[in-house]
Image (cartoon, rainbow, N blue to C red):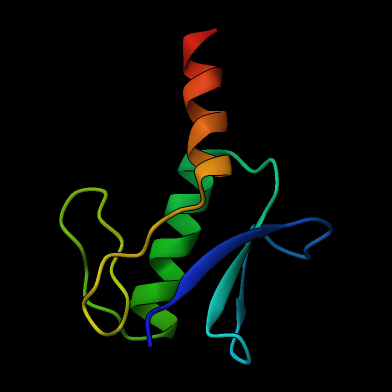
Length: 81
């Protein structure tokens, strides 16, 4: 089962692992670069996922981990300003 990423409010950290749902919660409004850095560390160090090339994030099964559109669209909007 692949890891899914969701956004949430009021998290204690930028990225939080939810083992019951096999998902990662990302703080809504967090900066994209911080999210990617924290998510990569969680996936590779804590969960044993392989290191992706470049900005690719991989699940422990080797499949790509997709970020929610809300995180990506916010980053694109910020860059356009």
